[in-house]
Image (cartoon, rainbow over all chains, first blue to last red; front, top):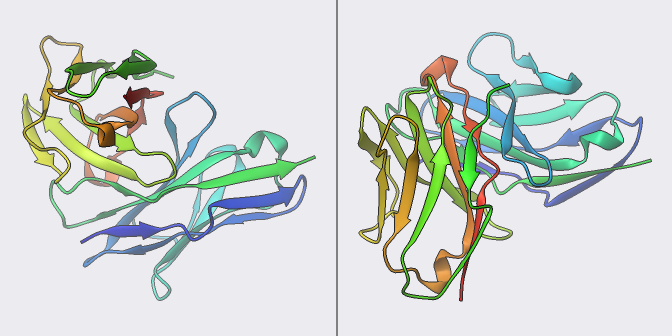
Length: 115
Length: 115
């Protein structure tokens, strides 16, 4: 079975500092990995995904994530946080060979960037 | 950017009543999904729909739940006899593809409160 763990309910960071939002996953095969963001009163929005190839994936709004197979992690990072990055962030996984198995999400991590 | 729209944004109902949550996916998308999130918990998969039939459903999606695409634009989730534990935020999503090109677009959700 597929699963995602986001160990932090809340991450606080000062504006201008680097941020990291953690995600670990479990799949039986090789993963497709995703990050989505939810701003208040909006639906989840796609940020970036890892399919294959380079372990460092760059996405929207200056975010990037690094796939680490040995640690089964896909942490979201940004070199310099903005107040406007404050939102709820969801990691998601799908087993690449799973056919119709749906995308499985974590419970989300709330990021607060303080000016 | 095209959007998935959901109505209503909030729905309050009495236990045992039927509710219908409505969604208009992005017009050229082929895959449709319902997810839900109980407050403070994971975003949980309910059902996926492709080619006018359910392609996958979770254990949550029991006989009380049904989905329909009654015309070319709407995608609905019906709960026949609501229970207190059905209270959650329900998200509709659509995508144009699966696998390596997959990118889900989510609506802003319907907050269902069962009293």
